[in-house]
Amino acid sequence: SQVLLNQLRAVFDQIIELQNAQDAMYRAALEELQLRLQFEERKKQRELEGKWGVTASEDEEESKRMKEFQDSIPKMCSQLRILTHFYQ
Image (tube, rainbow, N blue to C red):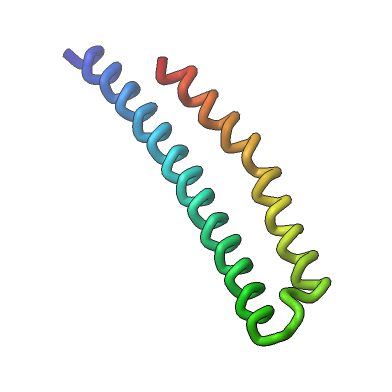
């Protein structure tokens, strides 16, 4: 019946929204990990070349980027909590 079809569609839409939110959170975490690893690799490479690992401005930029990511975590978690609440 149409009512059942509408209910199934609503459930399916919630599942897709939850999946998209989880995927976005996962991608953001992987991107952050990759950027941190690249930063550490550049630092090690420069040290091997006998240079300073990072400049003050590079260190400040990295710290700012890390803080922005950390600040985004509560928002992503809240979004997941809201979606899981509706999913239940």
